[in-house]
Image 1: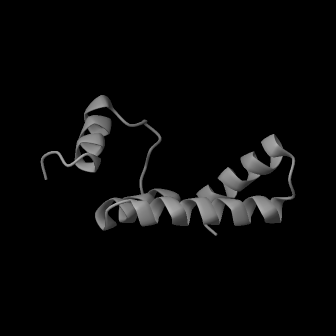
Image 2 (image 1 turned 180 degrees about the vertical axis):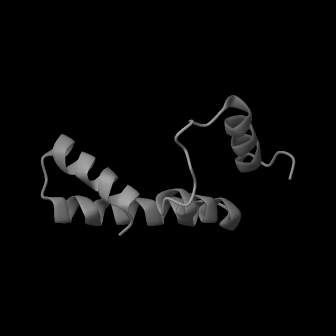
Amino acid sequence: MSNVKKEIAGLVSKKVGIPADKAEQAVEVVVNFIKQKLPPAVAGQVDAVLEGSVDLSDGIGLDDAAGLLGGLLGGKK
């Protein structure tokens, strides 16, 4: 499990009050479900973010968000 997924699992464990191992399982189930619903190219981007391969320290700008949303909704490719 990647560090980002572990961070998410830690938040889930803390906020919901479930054991860390159960939170990790829940995160895996949710991530896999979401990736199955997305186009393959976008699912790959999700993997890259969760693996820490993408630097999001400066946040996602409006242009980036609009481009991603447009791509998900069938906009320009």
